Length: 150
Image (tube, rainbow, N blue to C red; front, side, top):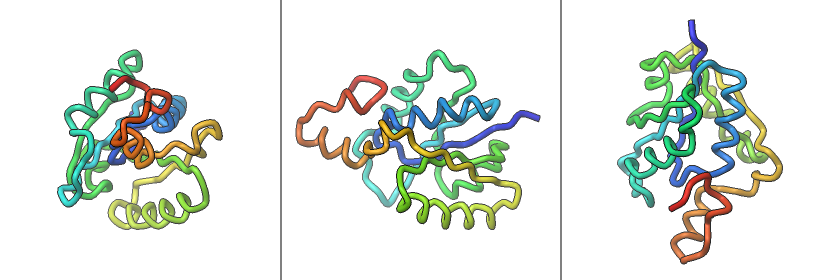
């Protein structure tokens, strides 16, 4: 049986910090699926189709990385695609508090689902999608934060 991991998030946008987590995940799992969660209650900055193409472009040399979008509960999607592991990146203790709670809820949804926390590389810990969005909205250069061009 393949060990499949799901790396879920809104990825609006997908940053170099996210890419680092995925690449490190490929050393641990046979396949890593970047799952772009669709939240109809939120307005996206970058369209999902655009972000899907950009993430696929970033991983074109990594056949073990796939990109999919999904709507609904992450644990339900993970079960549907037979991903028994979730990968989550932690930048700081605030991330841990939030992610720990989410992982416990996911475990309640599907008992076989395990969450694996990876500590963000210190050189990328300051990068967040919301900061990159804000910079881009105001015309600032964001190429140093993204693994693709926009």
